[in-house]
Amino acid sequence: MANHSSREIATEVISHQAAAESLPSKNGSPAEKVPENDISQQSEEWVDEKPPEDVPPDGGYGWVCVACSAWINGNTWGVNSSYAIFLSYYLSNDIFPDASDITYAFTGGLSMSCCLLIAPLVTHMVHLFGNRLILNIGAVLQTISFISASFAKQQWQLFLSQGVCFGFGMGFLFIGSVGVTSQWFLRKRSIATSIAAAGSGVGGLTYSLATGSMISRFGLGWTFRILGIITFVVNIIAANLIRDRNKATRSQYKAFHFPLLKRPEFLLLQAWGFLSLLGYVVILFSLPNFALSIGLTAHQGSIVGAVLNLGQGLGRPIVGLLSDRYGRLNMATIISLFCGVFCVAVWTPTQSMGLLCFFAIIVGAVAGTFWTTVVPVCAEVIGLQMLPSGLSIIWVLMVPPTTVSEPIAVILKDDSKGNRAYLYAQIFAGLAYIVGALCLSVVRSWKIGDNFVAAERKAAAEAANAAKAVKINPISHHATVTSTDDRTCIPGEKPHQSSQPALPPRESSSGTITPASNTSAWNPTVLLCRMVTWEHV
Image 1 (cartoon, rainbow, N blue to C red):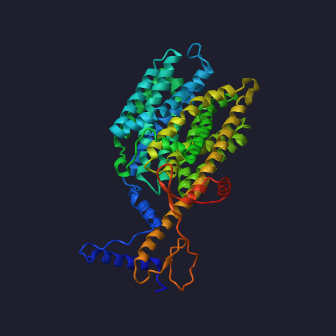
Image 2 (cartoon, rainbow, N blue to C red):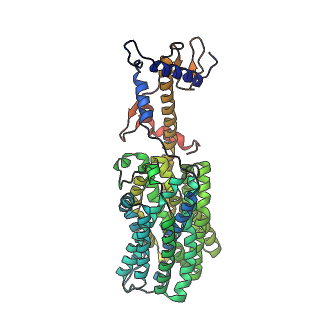
Image 3 (cartoon, helix red, strand yellow):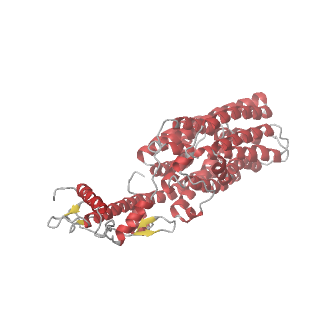
C-alpha cells in the first residue's frame, strides 16, 4: 500500500465513496456525506465555479480568417501607412491655402485616433449585430472618405475626409476583425495574429510605392479615387468571408469593464502601449520626410517608406514565431527595448540612403510590436473572456498618443540644424520605446508570479480534494496529504516533503478566488528578482 501513488489511492477511495453514497441509511434515506473542513469547501467552490473553457481548433477555417484579417489590415493600416507619402507631398507643396505643417501632421494622427476612439461603440455593435455587418459598414465608410478627399479644396475638408471619416471606417474594419483570429487559435495564437498583422506591412509596402507613383502620374484627386475603389473591393470580400466564434468562447462584449482599471498589471500594459505608439507614429510618418532633410529626393523618400513597410511585413510573423516559442511577454519586452536602443544608436547618426534603408527594414520589423502582440499579450493578462472589453479600453487609451505623436515630432523638428533637423524627434521616439519596455517588464514579472500562484491554487484544490477523499476511507482515514508534491503519506512512512495545510483561498476585488499568497504578488523586491528570471510567459 505504501508504494501506491496518491492518484491510485484517490481513485480507490472515490469508488468506495460512490458506493457508500448509493447505499441507503438506516432510515431508508441516502447516506449523509461526511462534513468537509473549510479549506476543502472553499477549494471545491473554486473548482465548481470555474466555467468549462472552450478549446480553439488551432487551424481549419481559422486560417481563412487569418487571411481575411491580413487583407483587412493591409487595406486599412497599410493604406494609412501611405499617409507618410501624402504628408511628405503636403509639406513640400502648397496644396491647401494657409495650412501649417502641424495641421498636416494632425490629419494623419486623427485617422488613427478616430479609429481607436470608436472602439467601445464598435465593440457594443458587434455584440448586437455581429462582426459581418460592422465590417461591411467600415468598408463603405472608408471608400466614402477617399472619394470625398479627392474633391477636398480646404484644409477642414481634408480633416473630415482623410482624417475623421477614414478613421471611422478603419475603426469599424479593424475593431470588428482584430479579435477574431485569437478565437481560432491557442498554441499558434501569436503566429496567427502576427501573420494577420503582417498584412499591414505588406499593404503599406504596396500602397507606399503605388501612392508616390500615382500622385506624380495621375495627380492627388485620382490617387484618392483609385485607392477608394481598390480597398472597397478587397475589404468587402474579406468582410464576408471572415467568421467569428463569439458564442463558443462566451466573449463578454462590454464597451468598458471598469474593474480592469483597478488592476496594476492592466494599467502597466496601457503604459507600454501608450509609449510604444508615441515612438511608432513618429517613425512611421517621419521617415520619408526625414529622407528629404538629409538631402535625398522625394522618390527616395517613398522608397524608404516602402522599405519600412517591407520590414513590417517580414518581421511581424517572425515576432509571432518567437513569441510562441519563447513567451509573448518575454518577446514584447525584449523587442520593445531593442527598438528604442536601435533608434538612438542607428537612426540619429544616419546620413545616407543605404544606412537609412538598413534602419528602415530593421525598425520596421520591430517598431510595430505593439500591434503584433497586444492581442495575445492582453489575453495572457486578462483572459479570453474579458479580451473584447480589455481591448476596447486599450484602443481608447491609445487615442492620445496616436493623435499627438507626429505633431510632437514636427514641433521637435529644428530646420536650423540642417541634416540634423530630426535629432530631438529621434531621441524622443527611442526613449518612448525604452520606458515602455520597462513598464512591460514589470507586467512580465507579475505574470511569472501569477503563474506560480495559479499552480499553487491548483495544487491546493487537488490536495483538498484528495484530503476529503482520504478522510472518508475506512482503510486510510489516518493518512495525511501533502500540498507540495501531490503524494499521500502513510503513517510510519517518511514524507518526501513536510505536510502543510493548503492556503485558504480569498475573494479578490475583481470577484475571483485567489490564494492568500497572492497578496505578495506586487512586492517590489520580488518583482525585481523576477525581472532577471527567465520563464516562458
